[in-house]
Amino acid sequence: MADHAKKLIAAKKAAALAAAQFNDPELEDKLKDLSPEQIKVFILALDAAMRKRRIQLVGTLTALLCVVIGLSFAIIVWMNHEPGTFIGWVFFVPFFLAGGTLWVFGKIANRIQIKIGEVEIDTKGKALESEST
Figure 1 (cartoon, one colour):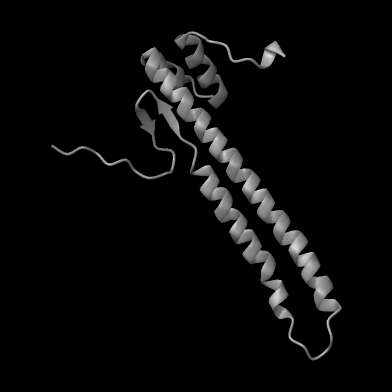
Figure 2 (cartoon, rainbow, N blue to C red):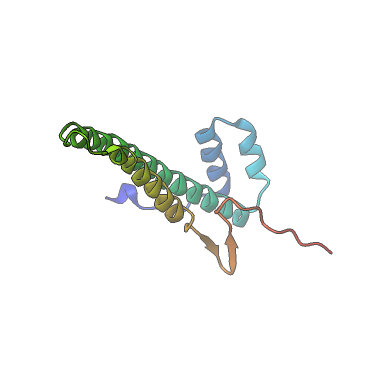
């Protein structure tokens, strides 16, 4: 149980772990130049990005299941319908379900926020407005 608890580590060790994770030796040198607060922000932003990607992956797999199961059901319905009746609409339903699933999971993934004190980091994929003087 104690293995899963989050531990506080030094900034240099965090930089080395991040560089090893991405197989990028230059990243370690870049992260060593940052202050511990900046490294904390980087780690939190990286964690939020990974959570967002995980949610998007689950949404994609769910949409795939909607298409596979929905098309299987549509073929069964189509094979058992009365001749002379139009039932082609059943083949569109799985794709509408998949699209709705992707939309919902995308909205959920965009709700991930990072707050450090009063600072909030944008994770919605939108460019932040730059201050012009």
